[in-house]
Image (spheres, rainbow over the protein chains, first blue to last red):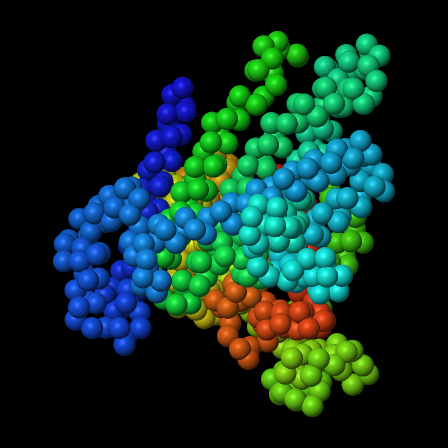
Length: 316
Length: 289
């Protein structure tokens, strides 16, 4: 309990400091904050300057500015986009669905395929199959995901015409269809980690006493794998999957821009290219918060997943 | 991130040692040979390109590989092999600069934290926590949003993003090392903190750090390529590998995969080679303890 509270407290402090970094980055920019925020010198009219000064409370001392900004953010007011002329929160909301669906789709792919490959590799340990799986997944991790994405587009969209080259689709089924190639491109890089963790925990489990006992009772090998080996591997695999998924919320930036998806990653890239700083701040802040929250939840949930603590009996 | 992923894999913490050998000797030798070759090509680049890597030839766009152009030509009719060679220099230089900067900052801070403990250590811990809160390429992207795109910004931003991880690793290694008797004996002899750290501690840590840094080099190269691909780093007509893939992407839709695939796969091969060599080094050098 104390540990949990400390972990939560640590998360809040880190979030507060990260948000301070994100806010203060404005002051690191060359030139003064007003002209940096407005970006295009043509828009540097007195009214615009006054509006920006008021919105960012630039006449207040720095500490007050940050607190007022943080207060707005906590109430869901992320400021106004200079380019789209609409509240950043609306912009983010309309783009979020694509990114979340993409990441969830990729997560399903890398968990299912990763666990499968890891299990096969553990059961066929030391054979050619094991070597091939380990080698192939490791190589897949080293291919940049934008290259994987372009190869997928070339083969499945241009040559075979199974999928569209770009666009994120309307309606759920159509969206899933459009997100298939991006999700594969995103998932491929994560496959090696999940495969490795599954393989390692399963190999460790196989030599433990409870598995020996089950074997000596004459349980069939598939039943042993299902009930005793895989089940105890769930904890580490889910932890690693969760961490990978958390990273993907930000890692989708590159894949989204290759496939022209209207997610928050491509929003971030566009807003940097158009010098739309309020949007940059909001998206970065959002990604940091999402990442921190997911990783903290994993830390807190992990003890609950351990089969030894949930089934009540100590198996050792 | 990488991205990957590039960004997604890029955030994975790197723990090199698991205490077993991962690759057989021939794989390691092959990978080391690849790295030596790439470095040699990077050094000799200006003298060995068969054509001018920046010279457009609109009469020969998207040519397939032929005896004249071994790897074909790109969307501006530039010789792919020449661009790949010129790109080796820029890509490797970028990754080396990033790693060198990150290492100098990270190792200095890490050793200082281990030696001083107290507030320096506490501040380092906080800074690292905050940096680790920015997943993947996010911190660099924020730096680029503030300071504008460009190779310099991308390299410095990435170096700042990697420095805390190096500092944390160095700190852990230095703490182990500082607890050993030889450090106490130098202290007894009246050597100053700076002298002990630089002359005795650092050389003894090099072997442990080396493997970690080599693996980090591959990761940095991939993340830098991702930034260049999005257009935040090197700008045209640079022959940087990541940028080459980005510039050739329109060709993919028209059916020309080669100009995007060649630099893309080269990145992958170099990253695999650095990983294998790096992990081998950390396995091998860690045995010393």
